[in-house]
Image (cartoon, rainbow, N blue to C red; front, side):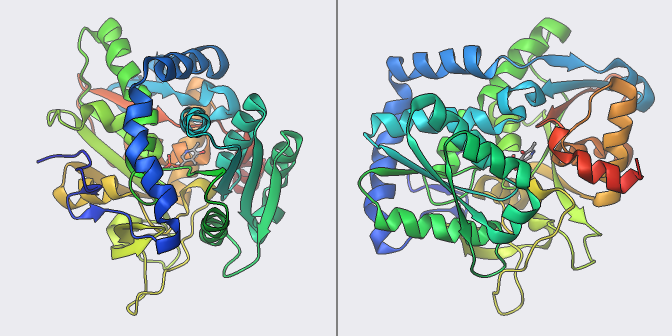
Length: 393
Ligand SMILES: *Cc1c(COP(=O)(O)O)cnc(C)c1O
């Protein structure tokens, strides 16, 4: 069984590039060049240098002793929350801006939901002095004002998507439309392991630095490169893809993907995409997505803005279908409780996306000698309002 993309851009039955004719030249240009460019020593050097000096990598692998004691197992946190801009997303945007430069592109577009990917994209555009346009749903613009302000400060133009539900999937549609109209000078920085091939593979490779570091760091801590379990939350799936990447072919490492159950998997208000999803095509990729009987995409819901995408990347659809990864759905309440527990026991306020991964500690009993890695995908500063409301702080 392979868990890597094949030459045609598929993970098992999922993936591919289902795109309009007019997008073909852009996607094809990227497909033909991405591996070649990523392998260039000069690219590698610049990518690694920026990850080190600008992002602050390697991010620590921290042994959480009080959390471990509470759950009677050995828990290590991969501290992506300590990256510049506060999450894992910048690993990918650094990689893609360097890719865009080598493809001779002078303009960047991106979609964003909560604004985290928009900020990470606007950040690297400021860093490189490249024009940046971010598409964002009108509703998201209203509810994520601080991130909109950040993007503007960083010099990005934020364009409101006013169609459909005025959220992430509509912003994505607008970005695709822009790309069709600007095929020559523009690169589209997609923010997760979603979209047409080669995006899911390219983004997974940029994020794979996470598991590459985990292996080295765990060797120093525990004398082995291989944990028993790796836990990560899944929106589109990029932080999980990065945390799983170098363990995919090591069947002894149990991979746990955590989706947002919102008000409950069966409540009609959730984002448990793999569990509830059916095969379909979204944003150029065949994958599992939440849809009605007649194929209309269902509006996802989660308390965490970063997890409410109606689809999931094709790698994760494949991991679900083959059983390589275990998929667990966590409700809003369970996630918030777990986020508070981490805060109280370790002095770390996690992003609510990441809190979903921590909630698994109550759902599953691990062995005392097990090594459990939790990918702490981001910090909770952006979520303070939500924590305040939830706990009446
Ligand atoms: C965006 C985001 C996610 C969800 O995106 P993935 O592509 O699934 O990783 C998770 N955690 C944080 C902190 C985020 O900002």
